Amino acid sequence: MRTNVTVVGAGLAGCEAAWQLAQAGIPVRLCEMKPQKYSPAHSYRGFAELVCSNSLKASRIGSAAGMLKEEMRLLGSLTMRCACDCAVGAGGALAVDREKFSDLVTEQITSCPNIEVVSGEVDEIPEGYVIIATGPLTSDAFAEKIFQLVGGKRLSFYDAAAPIVTAESVDMTKAFYAARYGRGDADYINCPMNEEEYKAFYAALIAGETAPLHEFDKREFTVYEGCMPVEVMAKRGEDTIRFGPLKPIGLRHPETGQRYYAVLQLRKENAAGSLYNLVGFQTNLKFGEQKRIFSMIPGLEHAEFVRYGVMHRNTFLDSPRLLDSHFRLRKEPRIRFAGQITGVEGYIESAASGIYAGLTLARELSGQSELTLPTDSMLGALSHYISDETVENFQPMGCNMGILPPLGERIRNKQLRYETVANRGLASFKQRLTQEGIQYENNR
Image 1: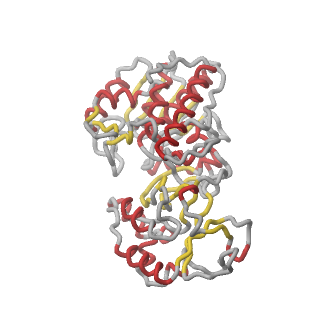
Image 2: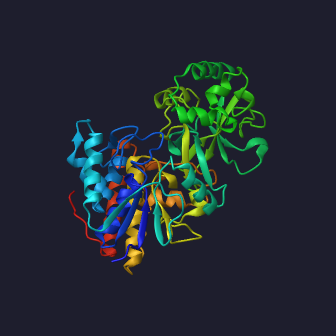
Image 3: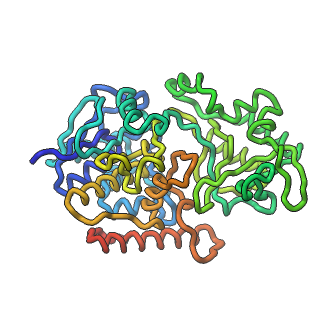
């Protein structure tokens, strides 16, 4: 039988995509440049190499990660099966022995009769149906071909992102809605600071502990002024950020008319208005430092950070303009993308996108109906986020409760609220699979 699908990249997303296709009886050609060539961050010979951490996040269903992992299990995830077989103690999280996990995934992939593994770097977009899952460190040669494919500006090579918080966690007794000079319909949430508050925040910011950069990140960001960390900008002088991202000019309280010494603006991240990003706060501070220091800003004392700021080399698409919710390239649907190159961030998110890309392509090639997941499921919400054309300043996002539609009721207890949201989403997820004739193991 001829091979009719090529998957490029044998990371988590590529392995999951190939596995879904193979289990559906569709021959797959899986291309991986290791061991002939390694990215700057990879060193192990096996597939699905975990580079940064060995944790696949929280296991409890009442968490975004636990919810997503359960959806992955229902879809027959190879990642989940192998992770459970080589798990190590990690409290309430699912963590694995990295090498055993990689070896097990590699063994499963290479022994699958429907998967042909081809070693060596790919430097052209393959013909026919293809899933590109080359990750955030896509090789320069192949990245150039993707660059040409998507029209240049729609592909980013740097991830310089500001933190994102949930709207409901902002203290609106201290913050207020307004647009600078009254232009717009109160589009921003504004967190005002007096002189004393600003100086305390400034002192903490310039003393904050930063995350170490890889050598290849240092080379890139040395010359990339446009993504300067806010803490680096602050060290140029006490008033630098007060005349930059924290400038108070043109902003007054809409009711009192009060002016402020400095103002942080939060900009809407999604159409639903459930998420807001800290404008101009690209940062390389360690995550714990971001939580501590940014929570000093009035209105953010109890903010829930669904994504912390990051600064590193990261090849990713402007997916809302390029991909549909099935991870297909809008202008050339034979091509799908999966993994972090699509703008999902994290191990399980990458793997889940690979599952969905492979499953939907398998159904298409088998003449089955199109599978669209409900947006109150975590995978459905992620696929909607990366394809939502209303998201203007697209940045990669991991799974979080903020991207799910709100409940029709208000539940003050956070744990109970999240469990209710997760159970609602899983029920919708299972119902959709049943409607589409997809069998799953109901193990909960």
